[in-house]
Amino acid sequence: MRLLLLLVLVFAHSASGELLVLHKGHSSLGFYTDQGTWIASAPVRSHPHEMVFSTDGRYAYTTDNGTMRIEQAGTGGNTVSIIDLKERRTVGEISLGEFRRPHGIDIIRATGQLLVSTELPDRLLLLDPVKRQVVRTWATEGKTAHMVVATPDGRYAFISNSTTANVSAIDLQTGKVKLIPTGARPEGSVVSKDGKRVYVCNRDAAHISVIDTATLAVSQTIKTSPGPVRIAITPDQRYVVYGLLDERGVEWADTRTGKIAGRVDLPAALGQIVSLHLSHDGQTAYAANENMDTVYAVSLAGKKILHSFKTAKGYSPDPVVPKP
Image (cartoon, rainbow, N blue to C red; front, top):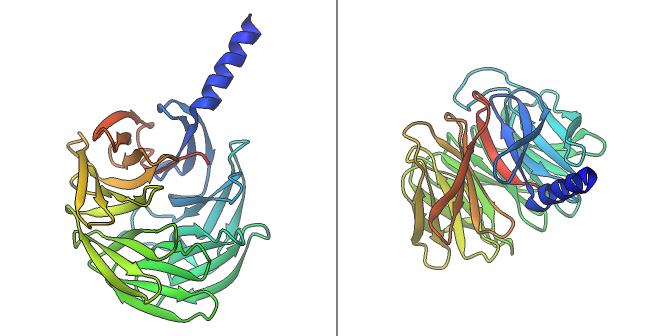
């Protein structure tokens, strides 16, 4: 009977899925149930900011920035940590050598190679996660390289340059760079499924720039509430969903009309919303209040908070992503 009960509990846990929470303050990747019960943590290098998964979903790669915020001085870190998601443990790292303060990260799905932006100096790096080495680098020609996204065909990478109010579009085949003016402090970005559009949050301009990947120019501007910081797109491509930094909310806009379609305010009186990711079905948004060590699950259809949970004090959760 005891064995049967254990099997039932294990099945129930695996069926419910897991959330992966990057602890920026604690320098670890946390494994939680989808209701927020802590399961395990895997240590990484200092102050990780972003993560991406291998194409088979087995590994997570984290950018170990070494500072808590881009405004902070210091040389920071120069590694990307590798975590085995099945075994829930760190299995290695990729040294970035002279390139420090890695921030954004994406994966080229056709090759499994990683794209990483660094702040010191401002570069885009191409990494081989199998050989664990830097393959190629490009100068971004902007300042304070932040987030990076790749088009589905692996042709272009788009890097948000937070202090020069533009995005670097880099042709990964030719190395040609085009700077695309956006708005003040571009940060989070997402590419449409067909690769035709890149949506970029301009945190200090209160709007989203929509970049046409054929012309490499802004084709549309979507007005938002103040402080859009991170962004995702629903699987049907109907809505872009984004976190509001200082207003502490989750908001979404209709990609067809360019109008705000919904918003849920989060109850915290303090802190900032620093991340935004969606469940696999696109129905739930996960946002983290880093300063308050709190994660929120928000129903888009119901326009309400489903639940919230706290990490340990000082863990400073940033990306909260469903396990692949």
